[in-house]
Amino acid sequence: MDVIKEGNSLERLVYRKAVAKQTTLSRKAFVKVETLHGQVEEAVTTKLKNRSKIVCFKSLHYTVVEGTGKVMLTLLKRAEGSIQFRVITHDDTAMSGKDYHMTNELVTMKAMEKEREISISIVDDENWEPDKDFFVELYSADATSRIKGEDTSTTVTIIDNDNPGTLGFICRNMIVRPRDEICTVEIERADGSSGEVSAELYITANNEALGGRPAKKGIDWKDLEVPKITFKTGETRQSVHILMPSTSVKEEML
Ligand SMILES: [Ca+2]
Ligand SMILES: [Ca+2]
Image (cartoon, rainbow, N blue to C red; front, top):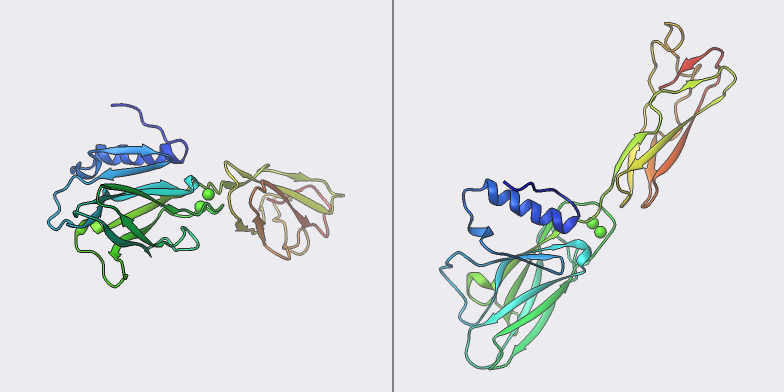
């Protein structure tokens, strides 16, 4: 079996599908996968009972990486002659304005035109978020009803491309001197810095700090006025200053 590694967003997407293909008993959804401009579309392989006789989507599921900026959908005309219809988006877990741009577009396909590509804009934000879906559906020109057929509705899945990283102490064991009045603790955000992240900070006594006597709150250290740290997008390092009102002997704070 090939070794499959997870890399950037598009590789991650193909990776997920490859893993799913190897683990699922049903291969219907994975018979044909095409990659184009950061999106993957699964061709319709199941025999639908009720297909549209007028116009339909070529694929019932498109998956696009958030940073691609748009998803391209292919429409197939089945009716003879010229037709007019609307392409309308609907929220599912993805919200219009926040995750993609709402579309309500009147489309005309001429008699000789059999296929049409349309695009829907995807919002590339800086926040980590789970993968989200929205629907695109084909309606009558006056927008009163959806065109009959299982293939007049398609799902678009947006794959997040942001990595919030992880927070950790740069030094896990610090020794402070008797004359120090402040203990400065450095916190690093590693392996990604997309979006705002925060963490709460608690200080607890180390029972071994003072030769067997626990360090005492209020004497050996003071709690932080704001026990929370927040990193903005792109911020990777911050310092927290802990006051030590009565440090007389060597002690460990954390
Ligand atoms: Ca992004
Ligand atoms: Ca995002």
